[in-house]
Image 1 (tube, rainbow, N blue to C red):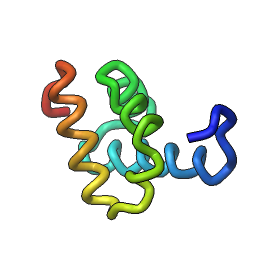
Image 2 (image 1 turned 120 degrees about the vertical axis):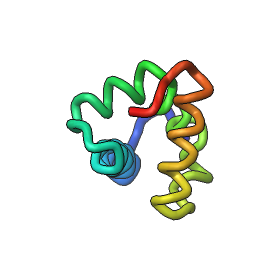
Image 3 (image 1 turned 60 degrees about the vertical axis):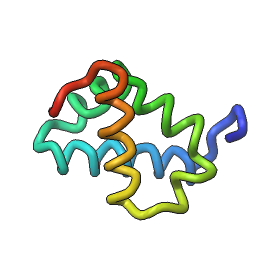
Image 4 (image 1 turned 180 degrees about the horizontal axis):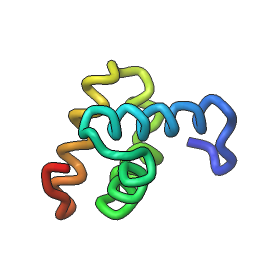
Length: 75
């Protein structure tokens, strides 16, 4: 990913956060801070080139795995 995010990348991140919030029945704010705390945001940043080509379910499953591996619990 380039150092300066473009609108497409920002939109993708926002979509992932909203989808994660909906899947886990939490607020968007809670989802953002949870993903930030347990490296979900970092995962999306580091793997954007691959993740944005996958299905929403695959990305949400990956975010769940990553956050659990980094100390998160079931939200």
